[in-house]
Image 1 (cartoon, protein in one colour):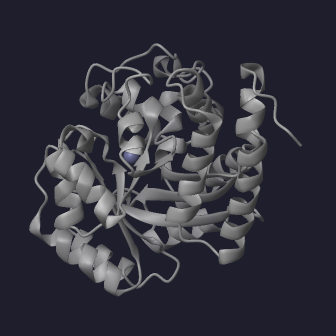
Image 2 (image 1 turned 120 degrees about the vertical axis):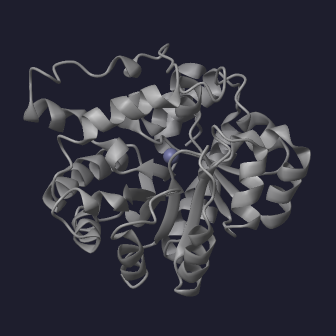
Image 3 (image 1 turned 180 degrees about the vertical axis):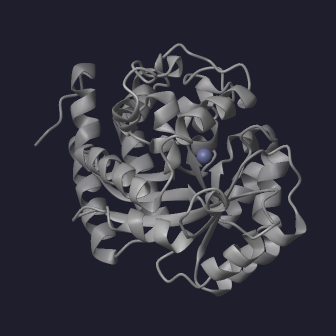
Amino acid sequence: MPVAANDCELPTFVQRLPKTETHLHLEGALPYELLQRLDPVKFARPPASWAPEFRFGSFGEFDQLILGLLAPWFTSAARYHEAAAIMFRRLAEQNVRYVETSFHLPVVQFIPARGDEILQAILEAVPVGMTVRVFAGLVRDCHSGPMPAVIADALRWKWLAGFDLHGHESLPLEEWTSEVWRRARNADKETKAHAGEFGGAGNVREAVERLGVRRVQHGVRAVDDPAVVALLVREGVTLDITPISNVKLGVARSLREHPIRRLHEAGVRCTVSTDDPLIFGNTLTDEYVGLAREAGFARSELVQFARNGFLAGTMPASVRQAALAELALLERDG
Ligand SMILES: [Zn+2]
Protein backbone atom coordinates (compact mmCIF):
# COMPACT_ATOMS: atom_id res chain seq x y z
CA MET A 1 0.00 0.00 0.00
CA PRO A 2 1.47 3.39 -0.91
CA VAL A 3 2.33 5.60 2.04
CA ALA A 4 1.23 9.23 1.84
CA ALA A 5 4.13 11.65 1.80
CA ASN A 6 2.60 14.38 3.97
CA ASP A 7 3.93 14.95 7.46
CA CYS A 8 0.76 14.02 9.36
CA GLU A 9 1.26 10.45 8.18
CA LEU A 10 4.82 10.32 9.49
CA PRO A 11 4.03 8.58 12.81
CA THR A 12 2.08 5.95 10.86
CA PHE A 13 5.03 5.42 8.55
CA VAL A 14 7.39 5.08 11.54
CA GLN A 15 4.97 2.65 13.19
CA ARG A 16 5.02 0.46 10.10
CA LEU A 17 8.81 0.25 10.08
CA PRO A 18 10.04 -2.94 11.70
CA LYS A 19 12.60 -1.54 14.13
CA THR A 20 15.41 -2.42 16.50
CA GLU A 21 16.47 -0.96 19.86
CA THR A 22 20.19 -1.59 20.24
CA HIS A 23 21.17 0.96 22.88
CA LEU A 24 18.87 0.55 25.84
CA HIS A 25 19.75 0.37 29.51
CA LEU A 26 17.32 -1.94 31.21
CA GLU A 27 17.33 0.05 34.44
CA GLY A 28 17.04 3.31 32.49
CA ALA A 29 13.94 1.93 30.79
CA LEU A 30 12.07 1.33 34.06
CA PRO A 31 8.38 2.04 33.37
CA TYR A 32 7.51 5.09 35.48
CA GLU A 33 4.16 3.62 36.48
CA LEU A 34 6.00 1.03 38.60
CA LEU A 35 7.55 3.80 40.69
CA GLN A 36 4.15 5.44 40.98
CA ARG A 37 2.71 2.18 42.25
CA LEU A 38 5.51 1.99 44.82
CA ASP A 39 5.01 5.52 46.13
CA PRO A 40 2.12 7.44 44.54
CA VAL A 41 2.94 10.61 46.46
CA LYS A 42 6.69 10.83 45.91
CA PHE A 43 6.39 9.86 42.24
CA ALA A 44 3.11 11.63 41.51
CA ARG A 45 4.62 13.41 38.52
CA PRO A 46 7.19 12.27 35.94
CA PRO A 47 10.61 13.91 36.18
CA ALA A 48 10.98 17.43 34.76
CA SER A 49 13.48 15.93 32.27
CA TRP A 50 10.57 14.48 30.27
CA ALA A 51 9.76 17.95 28.92
CA PRO A 52 11.00 18.30 25.32
CA GLU A 53 12.82 21.56 26.06
CA PHE A 54 14.56 20.23 29.21
CA ARG A 55 18.39 20.28 29.24
CA PHE A 56 20.65 18.77 31.90
CA GLY A 57 23.33 21.06 33.32
CA SER A 58 25.82 18.20 33.63
CA PHE A 59 26.20 14.42 33.52
CA GLY A 60 26.39 14.54 37.33
CA GLU A 61 22.87 15.96 37.44
CA PHE A 62 21.66 13.10 35.22
CA ASP A 63 23.46 10.55 37.40
CA GLN A 64 21.90 11.87 40.58
CA LEU A 65 18.40 11.81 39.10
CA ILE A 66 18.68 8.28 37.70
CA LEU A 67 20.15 6.81 40.88
CA GLY A 68 17.33 8.30 42.94
CA LEU A 69 14.75 6.68 40.67
CA LEU A 70 16.39 3.27 40.25
CA ALA A 71 17.36 2.46 43.82
CA PRO A 72 13.81 2.10 45.18
CA TRP A 73 12.75 -0.28 42.41
CA PHE A 74 15.64 -2.57 41.50
CA THR A 75 15.92 -4.60 44.69
CA SER A 76 15.48 -8.17 43.37
CA ALA A 77 15.54 -10.31 40.23
CA ALA A 78 11.72 -10.40 40.34
CA ARG A 79 11.66 -6.60 40.07
CA TYR A 80 13.87 -6.83 36.96
CA HIS A 81 11.38 -9.26 35.47
CA GLU A 82 8.41 -7.02 36.17
CA ALA A 83 10.10 -3.96 34.65
CA ALA A 84 11.34 -5.88 31.60
CA ALA A 85 7.91 -7.36 30.85
CA ILE A 86 6.29 -3.91 30.55
CA MET A 87 9.27 -2.45 28.71
CA PHE A 88 9.27 -5.22 26.09
CA ARG A 89 5.52 -4.94 25.62
CA ARG A 90 5.79 -1.21 24.94
CA LEU A 91 8.53 -1.85 22.40
CA ALA A 92 6.49 -4.57 20.69
CA GLU A 93 3.60 -2.10 20.42
CA GLN A 94 5.95 0.17 18.45
CA ASN A 95 6.80 -2.65 16.04
CA VAL A 96 10.23 -3.26 17.54
CA ARG A 97 11.33 -6.78 16.64
CA TYR A 98 14.88 -6.91 17.97
CA VAL A 99 16.28 -5.52 21.23
CA GLU A 100 19.74 -5.34 22.74
CA THR A 101 19.57 -4.25 26.35
CA SER A 102 22.14 -4.17 29.12
CA PHE A 103 21.79 -4.39 32.86
CA HIS A 104 24.27 -3.02 35.40
CA LEU A 105 26.13 -6.15 36.52
CA PRO A 106 27.83 -4.47 39.53
CA VAL A 107 24.33 -4.22 41.07
CA VAL A 108 24.96 -7.74 42.45
CA GLN A 109 27.12 -6.08 45.12
CA PHE A 110 24.11 -4.19 46.46
CA ILE A 111 21.03 -6.42 46.08
CA PRO A 112 20.46 -10.06 47.06
CA ALA A 113 20.44 -11.47 43.51
CA ARG A 114 23.08 -13.16 41.35
CA GLY A 115 23.80 -11.83 37.89
CA ASP A 116 22.62 -15.02 36.18
CA GLU A 117 19.33 -14.79 38.12
CA ILE A 118 18.80 -11.24 36.87
CA LEU A 119 19.65 -12.34 33.32
CA GLN A 120 17.17 -15.20 33.55
CA ALA A 121 14.47 -12.92 34.99
CA ILE A 122 14.86 -10.50 32.07
CA LEU A 123 14.85 -13.24 29.43
CA GLU A 124 11.70 -14.82 30.89
CA ALA A 125 9.91 -11.52 30.20
CA VAL A 126 10.57 -11.62 26.43
CA PRO A 127 7.30 -11.79 24.47
CA VAL A 128 6.71 -14.16 21.58
CA GLY A 129 7.85 -12.62 18.29
CA MET A 130 10.62 -10.47 19.78
CA THR A 131 14.32 -11.32 19.82
CA VAL A 132 16.15 -9.93 22.84
CA ARG A 133 19.87 -10.07 23.57
CA VAL A 134 20.90 -9.16 27.09
CA PHE A 135 24.31 -7.66 27.84
CA ALA A 136 26.12 -7.24 31.14
CA GLY A 137 26.96 -3.59 31.68
CA LEU A 138 30.26 -2.84 33.39
CA VAL A 139 31.79 0.49 34.34
CA ARG A 140 35.35 1.60 33.83
CA ASP A 141 36.33 1.37 37.50
CA CYS A 142 34.34 -1.68 38.65
CA HIS A 143 37.12 -4.28 38.69
CA SER A 144 37.48 -4.61 42.46
CA GLY A 145 35.97 -6.50 45.40
CA PRO A 146 33.84 -9.42 44.19
CA MET A 147 33.60 -8.15 40.59
CA PRO A 148 36.57 -9.95 38.95
CA ALA A 149 35.03 -13.28 40.06
CA VAL A 150 31.53 -12.22 38.95
CA ILE A 151 32.88 -11.21 35.52
CA ALA A 152 34.81 -14.47 35.14
CA ASP A 153 31.62 -16.35 35.99
CA ALA A 154 29.56 -14.26 33.53
CA LEU A 155 31.78 -15.40 30.68
CA ARG A 156 30.22 -18.84 31.17
CA TRP A 157 26.56 -17.78 31.24
CA LYS A 158 25.17 -19.37 28.13
CA TRP A 159 22.41 -16.84 27.49
CA LEU A 160 24.44 -13.74 28.16
CA ALA A 161 24.90 -11.95 24.81
CA GLY A 162 28.04 -10.12 25.87
CA PHE A 163 29.46 -7.07 27.62
CA ASP A 164 28.90 -3.35 27.27
CA LEU A 165 31.16 -0.75 28.88
CA HIS A 166 29.16 2.02 30.58
CA GLY A 167 29.91 4.84 32.94
CA HIS A 168 31.97 7.96 33.13
CA GLU A 169 34.06 8.41 30.02
CA SER A 170 36.36 10.78 31.87
CA LEU A 171 37.78 7.76 33.73
CA PRO A 172 40.69 6.02 32.02
CA LEU A 173 40.27 2.71 30.26
CA GLU A 174 41.81 0.29 32.76
CA GLU A 175 44.06 -2.58 31.76
CA TRP A 176 41.63 -5.39 32.74
CA THR A 177 39.00 -4.18 30.27
CA SER A 178 40.68 -5.15 27.00
CA GLU A 179 41.59 -8.55 28.48
CA VAL A 180 37.96 -9.22 29.50
CA TRP A 181 36.66 -7.97 26.14
CA ARG A 182 39.09 -10.27 24.32
CA ARG A 183 38.14 -13.26 26.47
CA ALA A 184 34.46 -12.50 25.88
CA ARG A 185 34.90 -12.65 22.10
CA ASN A 186 36.85 -15.89 22.48
CA ALA A 187 33.84 -17.23 24.40
CA ASP A 188 31.56 -16.23 21.48
CA LYS A 189 30.15 -13.19 23.23
CA GLU A 190 29.48 -9.80 21.69
CA THR A 191 31.36 -6.74 22.90
CA LYS A 192 30.34 -3.09 22.91
CA ALA A 193 31.47 0.10 24.59
CA HIS A 194 30.14 3.56 25.34
CA ALA A 195 32.54 6.13 23.90
CA GLY A 196 32.45 9.50 22.17
CA GLU A 197 29.48 10.85 24.13
CA PHE A 198 31.17 13.17 26.65
CA GLY A 199 34.64 12.00 25.65
CA GLY A 200 36.23 12.96 22.35
CA ALA A 201 36.93 11.16 19.07
CA GLY A 202 40.07 9.69 20.71
CA ASN A 203 37.84 7.63 23.01
CA VAL A 204 36.03 6.20 19.99
CA ARG A 205 39.36 5.24 18.44
CA GLU A 206 40.41 3.68 21.74
CA ALA A 207 37.21 1.58 21.91
CA VAL A 208 37.80 0.27 18.39
CA GLU A 209 41.56 -0.23 18.58
CA ARG A 210 42.19 -1.15 22.23
CA LEU A 211 38.93 -2.87 23.12
CA GLY A 212 38.40 -4.29 19.65
CA VAL A 213 34.67 -3.48 19.54
CA ARG A 214 32.72 -3.05 16.32
CA ARG A 215 29.69 -1.69 18.16
CA VAL A 216 30.07 1.70 19.80
CA GLN A 217 27.28 3.16 21.94
CA HIS A 218 26.99 6.85 21.00
CA GLY A 219 30.34 7.45 19.25
CA VAL A 220 28.99 10.74 17.95
CA ARG A 221 32.11 12.80 18.83
CA ALA A 222 33.96 10.76 16.19
CA VAL A 223 32.61 13.45 13.87
CA ASP A 224 35.32 15.82 15.16
CA ASP A 225 38.15 13.75 13.65
CA PRO A 226 37.94 12.70 9.99
CA ALA A 227 40.55 9.99 10.62
CA VAL A 228 38.28 8.37 13.23
CA VAL A 229 35.28 8.62 10.91
CA ALA A 230 37.38 6.88 8.24
CA LEU A 231 38.36 4.22 10.78
CA LEU A 232 34.68 3.54 11.59
CA VAL A 233 33.82 3.17 7.91
CA ARG A 234 36.86 1.00 7.16
CA GLU A 235 36.25 -1.35 10.10
CA GLY A 236 32.48 -1.53 9.58
CA VAL A 237 31.78 -0.16 13.06
CA THR A 238 28.15 0.51 13.95
CA LEU A 239 27.25 3.50 16.13
CA ASP A 240 24.15 2.93 18.27
CA ILE A 241 23.01 6.53 18.51
CA THR A 242 20.42 8.03 20.86
CA PRO A 243 19.59 11.49 19.49
CA ILE A 244 17.12 12.78 22.11
CA SER A 245 19.39 11.70 24.98
CA ASN A 246 22.28 13.51 23.28
CA VAL A 247 20.29 16.73 22.99
CA LYS A 248 18.99 16.67 26.58
CA LEU A 249 22.48 15.96 27.93
CA GLY A 250 24.07 18.71 25.83
CA VAL A 251 26.11 16.34 23.62
CA ALA A 252 24.36 17.93 20.63
CA ARG A 253 22.72 21.36 20.60
CA SER A 254 19.59 20.18 18.79
CA LEU A 255 18.35 17.34 16.60
CA ARG A 256 18.91 19.60 13.60
CA GLU A 257 22.59 20.00 14.49
CA HIS A 258 23.07 16.41 15.66
CA PRO A 259 26.22 14.72 14.24
CA ILE A 260 24.16 11.74 13.04
CA ARG A 261 23.64 13.63 9.76
CA ARG A 262 27.36 13.95 9.01
CA LEU A 263 28.20 10.46 10.27
CA HIS A 264 25.46 8.89 8.16
CA GLU A 265 26.51 10.83 5.07
CA ALA A 266 30.14 9.84 5.62
CA GLY A 267 29.06 6.20 5.34
CA VAL A 268 29.15 5.24 9.03
CA ARG A 269 26.50 2.66 9.90
CA CYS A 270 24.19 4.35 12.42
CA THR A 271 21.23 2.93 14.31
CA VAL A 272 18.66 4.81 16.39
CA SER A 273 17.69 4.01 20.01
CA THR A 274 16.40 5.63 23.20
CA ASP A 275 19.14 5.03 25.86
CA ASP A 276 17.20 5.78 29.10
CA PRO A 277 13.52 6.49 28.43
CA LEU A 278 12.80 6.67 32.17
CA ILE A 279 14.84 9.87 32.24
CA PHE A 280 14.22 11.37 28.80
CA GLY A 281 10.51 10.47 28.49
CA ASN A 282 11.17 9.38 24.90
CA THR A 283 9.91 6.50 22.77
CA LEU A 284 11.64 5.01 19.76
CA THR A 285 8.86 6.48 17.62
CA ASP A 286 9.73 9.94 19.00
CA GLU A 287 13.34 9.44 17.88
CA TYR A 288 12.44 8.58 14.27
CA VAL A 289 9.76 11.26 14.03
CA GLY A 290 12.16 13.86 15.50
CA LEU A 291 14.89 12.94 13.03
CA ALA A 292 12.46 13.43 10.14
CA ARG A 293 10.74 16.59 11.39
CA GLU A 294 13.62 18.40 13.03
CA ALA A 295 16.71 17.05 11.32
CA GLY A 296 15.15 16.70 7.86
CA PHE A 297 15.83 13.02 7.31
CA ALA A 298 13.91 11.54 4.38
CA ARG A 299 11.78 8.44 4.78
CA SER A 300 14.32 6.41 2.82
CA GLU A 301 16.91 7.43 5.42
CA LEU A 302 14.64 6.36 8.28
CA VAL A 303 14.31 3.01 6.51
CA GLN A 304 18.11 2.85 6.34
CA PHE A 305 18.48 3.44 10.10
CA ALA A 306 15.99 0.66 10.78
CA ARG A 307 17.75 -1.62 8.28
CA ASN A 308 21.10 -0.91 9.93
CA GLY A 309 19.76 -2.29 13.20
CA PHE A 310 18.83 -5.58 11.57
CA LEU A 311 22.21 -5.75 9.82
CA ALA A 312 24.21 -4.97 12.99
CA GLY A 313 22.28 -7.18 15.39
CA THR A 314 22.66 -10.88 16.00
CA MET A 315 19.34 -12.57 15.34
CA PRO A 316 17.91 -15.64 13.60
CA ALA A 317 18.28 -15.28 9.82
CA SER A 318 14.50 -15.61 9.40
CA VAL A 319 13.89 -12.57 11.64
CA ARG A 320 16.43 -10.50 9.72
CA GLN A 321 15.14 -11.56 6.30
CA ALA A 322 11.51 -10.84 7.17
CA ALA A 323 12.35 -7.37 8.49
CA LEU A 324 14.59 -6.48 5.55
CA ALA A 325 11.88 -7.57 3.10
CA GLU A 326 9.27 -5.40 4.84
CA LEU A 327 11.67 -2.45 4.90
CA ALA A 328 12.34 -2.84 1.17
CA LEU A 329 8.60 -2.64 0.50
CA LEU A 330 8.18 0.44 2.71
CA GLU A 331 11.13 2.09 1.01
CA ARG A 332 9.63 1.44 -2.41
CA ASP A 333 6.20 2.76 -1.45
CA GLY A 334 7.24 5.51 0.99
ZN1 LIG B 1 23.93 4.40 27.02
